[in-house]
Length: 483
Image (cartoon, rainbow, N blue to C red; front, side, top):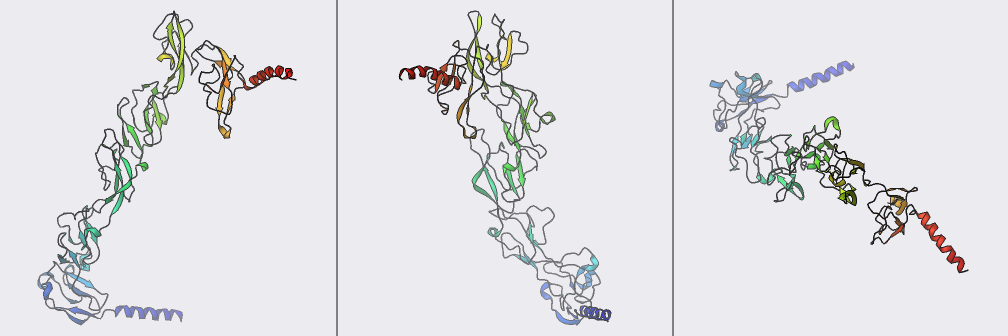
């Protein structure tokens, strides 16, 4: 019973489908568009046909093109348009498109298009095209306005899918924003984002683009694409405001001894920057400033690597430690005051004349005491930072501790060797341990004249407990005398 019901329903649906089309329009003359006179109601149960519109004003003809207007197939199917979706569906085409960028009243009826399968007939046009708006005017590409869609990869073209849809004003086209980049007029200036403004981009330019900081252009248009997707001075992206320099790796570039370095974008495969190793102001000559990694992905004695954009900045003269200077006086080397040294990337070392360096020689002291001895130096000794003199005495050293909110001076439990050019072998300590200012030494020298929070002591007597004990020893006899 159920099967019989299903069959009845299917038969009813099929019968309804087959009887949906019962009549078609007919015409006996149709050479030009304006001369067509349609007569409805020709009985038909297959499909309706009409001649293909071959131009804005003319149809395919019966005699020459094998076309017909009525019921059933044409003798030359590719010269007809077929339909079967409703009675009298084979009406005259009405799809129009604007044909001029300068005259928005100029329009054309659109000819039909060829079907991929000729036996299936031609198909009506469904698209209009136009050139792109650049903010001032539409593009001037030849044949850029009219019927049909854009060709593949066409640059100055936009298409749409309704009659007269390309009848638009420039101000009605879509815009987007891109990050704006500017730089000062002075030599050496770099491009940075102007966070107070954006560049307005129109449909004639796709995407946003950004300059590398060191791009040599005087100005920058953020709208559009770059000539090379991995260019060192330009990068582009597809979405609004996507042109953010922070999203692309860039490094300083130039020869190891270049007076000026230029920041350029790196390729996606380059995630680090490198620079030459700096040894007390002397740069390695085999490594340049550029994108990329050092050999084996780590620092070497000629190359330094880092990970942030533009991180490979030259070190410059940055003070790193102190060393005693030397002068040859009265037939011997004499230690002088400490001066700042710039180790660069090298170990923080000092040097001093050897004990048997009794005559002045250029290699007795290297770089005025800064850094290690020259390799060939026979009368020179390398020491740790601030220790390039013979030890003179011992003192407790003091360091300011502000960790965990302590904010106090603290001393070493045991006295340590002191290195000083001062002949007065004294020690010192802060009077008020909670006060940072006024105590500038480390405990190995006497107080300076301006050290208001400093007390001078004898050797090894500058621990806090010894001074307290000494003060008590002095105060007790006075106390007893007053009793």
